[in-house]
Amino acid sequence: MALVEKLFPLKSYKEITSEWLQKMLTVNYGHKIFIKSWNLKQPEDRQGFLSEICYVTVNYEYQNHENMCNYTENDKKSLQMDPKAKHEAWQNEELRLFVKFFPETKIHIDFMVNAKLADKEVAFYMFSISKIFQDISRSIGALQIVPKIYYADCKDESLTIVQEDLSDQGFKTILNREGSTLQQTKVALKSIAIIHAIGLIYKNKKGKLPHLKKFDIEFVQKFLEPNTITLAQYLEGSPLSGKIKELAPIANQLLLKAKRISDGFLETVCHGDLWMGQLMFPANEDCACVLDWQFANIGNPIQDIMALLFMSGNMEILETHLTQILQTYWETLIDTLQKGETTIDISFEVFLQTVERLWLLGFIFLTASLHDFLGADYISDQRLRAAYNFLNNRKLFDNILKEVDDTIP
Image 1 (cartoon, rainbow, N blue to C red):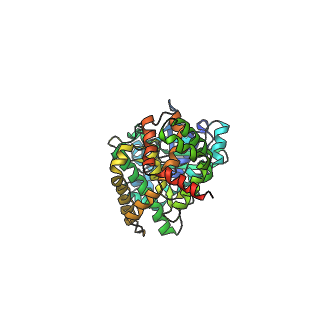
Image 2 (cartoon, one colour; image 1 turned 60 degrees about the vertical axis):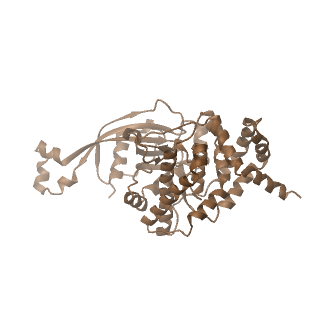
Image 3 (cartoon, rainbow, N blue to C red; image 1 turned 90 degrees about the horizontal axis):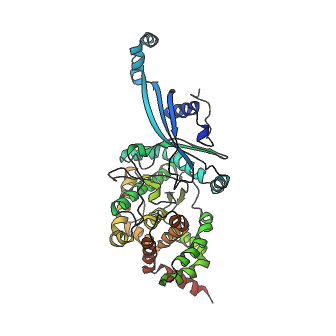
């Protein structure tokens, strides 16, 4: 018999009740719990959140089965008579949760539903609570590479994701307009490398990858061409402006070019929108928890590397420490694969060569995010220009435009 009847996702924080929380935690823990009290708080600052969110603190109690297992039937009957025995048989706990819903506005709900963002995030979190994911994470001591999930489901226009409140543990998001530090970049790539590796291990053991869609080219196309035009205007007067103007009419073809280059390399679970705004670090910054998996997809893992380096990287650090940064990622990937008794027939040298062929992904991720980044002041003018100069110095734009010229009779 089920501990509780089927639980359904909620439309907003206004629908949270003591009964719903009790059912949710009972299902999660696999034994009956009782809510003693709870309270809800909305964030003062909602900048950066598309979804509706809130924080919930729950005080609950449950039977202490470790103590109960040694009780006789008479002992159990005496619990109602002996307050001390009753106290020992029950455990009191406090839990701090972060809860996520669909946005309040219809236009934003439609945006998320049409792009299937909620479905992707729920599908990823179902993967993150799988036995393979948990076992590998535990074996390498990386239990907080993603938040602990208590509940995740979506249905029609209802979405509810309940996860641990990392801020209560001292975790925080670190945003620097000039770009992340070398340490932050390496730690972030270690976390995503572990997740990429677990995806490959899952495929090795299950014979298939988790139930996620391929990278959504059509979704990115909506933003890439108009943002390329905006970029050309932004860079007006610089040597790069003319090249970017020439790229604008073929911007969406660049996605197909990147896909062709990506195909044939590794294919695993990817984040799809990896930058520092999707990460939380503890005070000592020795690990990174990867959040907001709304763009989760099955694809080439280099997409996440490029997204992080260009949407959050410091270009001076990238110029100086690129090989070291990529080696950190690769060693973490290989070490995790070994823990999962999985191997890949790709060398570090081939990985580096593939990275060199996919700088185009760096352009695509940064340019597709341009309006959001400039609007929220997430990136400085100096870092923005340095990122495109980095790509220009590697002849990315010249090579693309030459290919276009070569195809013209």
